[in-house]
Image 1 (tube, rainbow, N blue to C red):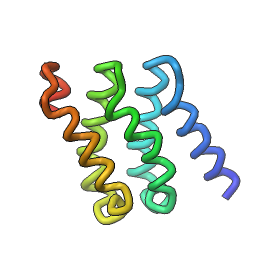
Image 2: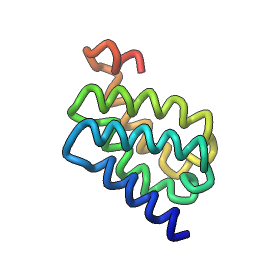
Image 3: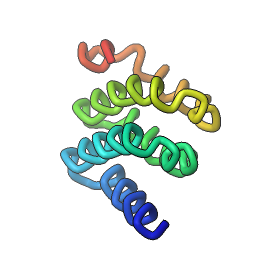
Length: 107
C-alpha cells in the first residue's frame, strides 16, 4: 500500500509539474499504470482524474495531444471504471473539438 501511495504521489507530481516534458511523462506514467495496474487506477479514479483532466485542457499543445491520445487507450482498458469521472471527461474532450491544431483535433 505504501508503494502504491508513493507511485500515485509521483504521478500527481508529474501531472502538475511546471515543465511540459514532465507533464507528458505524467500522462505516459498514467497510461502505463492503466495497463499494469488498472485496479489501482480504478480505485483512485476521481483523485487521479482531478489532475489528468487538467492535462486534457493543458495550454501546451503537445501535452494536450498526448493526454487525448492516452485517454483513447485508457477508455478501452478502464471501461466502466471511468463512470465516476465520465461527465468531466466528456466536458474536457468537448472543449477540444474546435481545436485548429491538427494533432489535437485528430486525437
